[in-house]
Length: 249
Ligand code: SAM
Image (cartoon, rainbow, N blue to C red; front, side):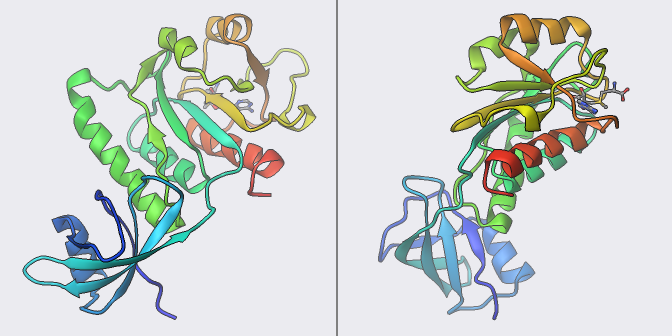
């Protein structure tokens, strides 16, 4: 059975509406997927209730036009509302984390510039980076069949964190424990949401860990005896809480 292409569109959707697709979406549909007139599609626009829309490709040239049919309600959002705060990483590691976090159902991603963060995003570079990261989220949503997009927050400094933290249980993951550290599986279920914080390649300073614990309400947890790469740790903690308390396990 040929899978129906699933496309994110930035438009209101309603039964009977005919709309043109963005040039890059047209290119993907016509030239990458080589779809023709009459192709059945599934559209979503990240607005309103969690649903996708059946549509038909009715024109391919010079622009791609689709006729929207009915909405289909879906339930693919994580039952656990996860906020992932991850130290900004070098190269395209943050982009990999963003893609995996979207697939794993994270609702908000906050890139953190902390004491030992090597990568930093200059203010004037943020608009381009934001467009690129949001495109990664859209493509990961299309692939994973999410119809709601993970929200990407602009990069924040450590001092800005307290004002941003959701009112949920908060866990900071630290590998430099002296004594026997707490582990996720020993904790009670966090309720409807959880906030996870993992560090950059250089980790957290002990002052940051202490501040997080004493003035931000974070519980400091270990991920066991092996030191995970920063990108691995960010994805591992989401996978762990989704398995323990969400909809993965
Ligand atoms: N100290 C590490 C090292 O020597 O490579 C640097 C930090 S580690 C690469 C990046 C982040 O992953 C840490 O800040 C922490 O959040 C998380 N992490 C990695 N392994 C961990 C573990 N065993 N327990 C808890 N957190 C871990």
